[in-house]
Length: 210
Image (tube, rainbow, N blue to C red):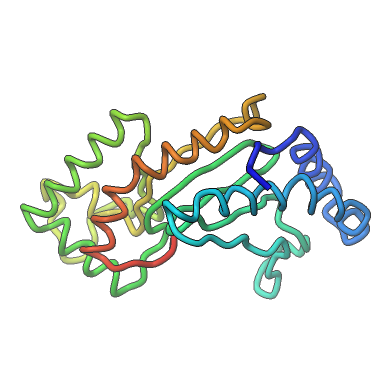
């Protein structure tokens, strides 16, 4: 199967799941999920495996053990595409690449690399190029002030405050989601994000979108 986008029924499935996140709804509509949600996602990661590496689709069930929200199912379908991330929901399409949440050791290496004049300015330059190309770089779980032990007037203090850093692009639901154009947009983001992924891999260490 070649990826041809997600049909409107995929969005309708998630709209229904948001309204009725129950086992009854899930099992009544599971064939729809398999055919118009999961199958296109599998086709997408199969199409992109040669360029970006093998992918995997995350399971649809939520881990509710430590959550106040006990709804059993995710209202998204998401997958890794190599070290990139793709997600579809009733809100639209999201594509990301990078480290969403760094471990303690990764964060130490990241801050050291940002502090270094050569590698820190290299990161600033590649972020500027990616942003100009239409793929912004977003910080996650960012501190409101300087990290402990770092001066508030550091020339790259904004980058130092981030605990995660990703290339991040989102689109609302539009007709092109149901066509092969969706793959073109995903590929564009992942290719544009490659310099950031390489910088993080070399300076921080690989970790699949986490």
